[in-house]
Image (cartoon, rainbow over all chains, first blue to last red; front, side, top):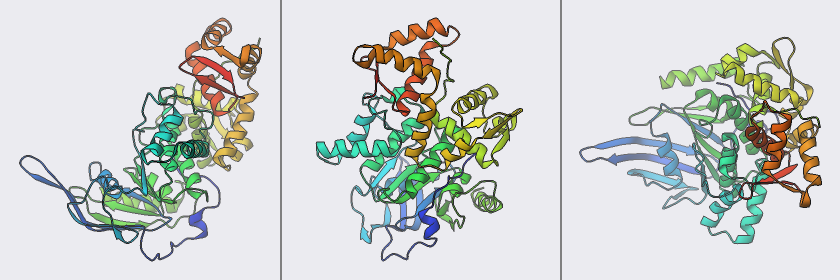
Length: 271
Length: 158
C-alpha cells in the first residue's frame, strides 16, 4: 500500500506530547457490547477501556469484523453499550453524541441531491437555520477543494470526489470529534494516497473544526502514516491488544526505517 | 481548431501519483510503480499522461519523475494546489476550444450535445461522452466552467 502524509508544519510536530487534559475528550471505561441472536449472545467488545485526548489523531486497527465500526457507533451515541461507561468531556454520554460526525466507507450520499444539497442536509438535520446552512455548506465545500462542484450529483463524481463530499458534510457540522470508518478503502491506491494526504492537510490546518479524529482502518500502514496513536484490537471479542504512540515526524514516508518498525510491530500484534 | 484529447482520469489520482512517486524518492520505474500499487499497466500510463500534460511529472526513459511544479503542488494547501493545477488546465488546447465555444454562445451556456458533436468531428477516435465528462470534471475543479446535469448545459463560470 502507498501512503504517507504531505508537507506543512503540523500541529503534532509543534506539540509532540498531548497536553494531559483535565478530562479526556472521550473515554471508554470497561465497555462491553453484545448482540443477542435467537439462540445465543455474541460478545463484540469485551471490557474495552480507552481514551481520546483533545487534538489527537487516533487510528483503531484490527482484523476485519473485530468490532471497529461498533466502536465508532458507540462514540457517536448511535449504539448504547451493554455494560460499562462512555464519558464525553468527563460526563456520561447519553443518547446521540452531537459533538461527533462520521465519514463513511461507502460515502453514504443521497443520489438525488447535489453536492451542496448533500452537505447542507446534514446541517438541516441538526436544525441549523437556512442562511447559516448556505454559508457553512459553501465554506466547507471550499475547504475540501470541491469549489466548482456544488451543482454536481454524486453520479457525476469520481469515488475520491464523493469522499470529499462525505468529508465536507461531516466537517460542516463542526464536530469536536471526527469519526472516520475506513474512509479510503473504497478508493484505488492513487486516489487514496491523495485523499489521505488531504485529510492530514485539513487536520493540520488551524481552522479545522474540532481537531480530534478517530479513524478505523484495517490497513496498518495507513494507521502508521496518519495517527498520533494506534489502538490495536484483538477480535472475537475485541479487546485492546496494544496502544502505541507513533513518534514519527510528519510528513511520514513509508520507506523510512522507523515507519517499517512501527508497521511490523503492529502487524505482528494483529496476526 | 486544434483539439487534443485529455486522458479520462480524475485529478485526485493524478495528484496521488505525484505523491507516490515523490515518496519513492522523486523518480520511479513505470513497471515497478504499476506493480507496487496494483494498477494495470495501461491504466497507470493514462494517469502518468494526465500528470505529464499538467506539467507535474515528466517521463525520462521509462521512468516517471516529479517536476518542480509537482513538488510545489505537494507542498501546497488544498486551495493552493487547486490554483496551481487550474493554471495548467487553462492552458490545455481542449479547454481553450471549449471556453471559446462558450464565450460565443448566448449567455455563455451551451448544450452538452454541441460539444459531443464537435468532439466526434475532431476527435473521432475518442469516446466523446467520456471525454466531455472529463472536460467537465477538470473544468469544475479549475472553476473554469460549470455543468448542470438536469438541463445538460455547460456554462462559463461567472
